Amino acid sequence: MAKIKLTKGELKRQRDALAQYQRYLPTLQLKKQQLQMEILKETGNLEKKKKEEYEKRNYIETWAGFLSDPGVSVRKWVMPKEVITGRKNIAGTDLPVFKRVQFEEAEYDLFLTPLWVDNAVEELKNLVLMREEIAVIKEGVKILRQELRVTTQRVNLFEKIKIPEAQEAIRLIKIYLGDQTTNAVGRSKMAKKKIEALLTVGVKA
Image (cartoon, rainbow, N blue to C red; front, side, top):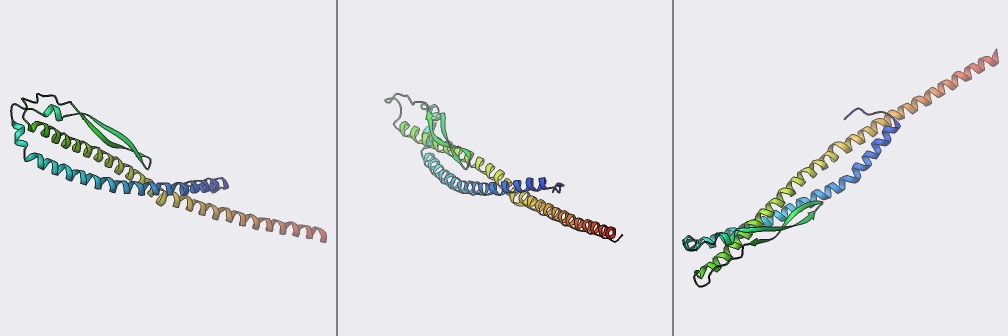
């Protein structure tokens, strides 16, 4: 703890600081709880989406051999043109929210293109969509964990350092000022006795 001034002004400053810390700490603790709950929720959602993506990928692999047909290329129709996201606020933290993926419009001759292409394009689009959604959720979890780390540091700073330091400073200043008051009273009594003694001597003379 830094050296403090043992004055009434410093006592007021320390009391004001302590009141501020104690007022702000519950807000930080609540934010920490909200972030922890959201992380649990989003990591659970992430695992669910990963499982769905894994199952979709395994299903596609059962007929992926068709995609090697040199006469058919579906790549340009399943590449994401744009990933649309929104925002949501959790405990004062802005997070990305997946909305949709825009793809190039698939245009091909229905008579010359194999019948399986329609389903293949649709299934591959769904797989890409799942992967993009997973990426957005991962980004959100990363942001939440970073915010939780910072918030936890602040909670610890207030709980373990700032509040105890202010309380100790207040205790020391009050002891010092109390001693000063006691000493002042003692000196006053001694001075009064000396004056009375002098007056008594003067009367006798």
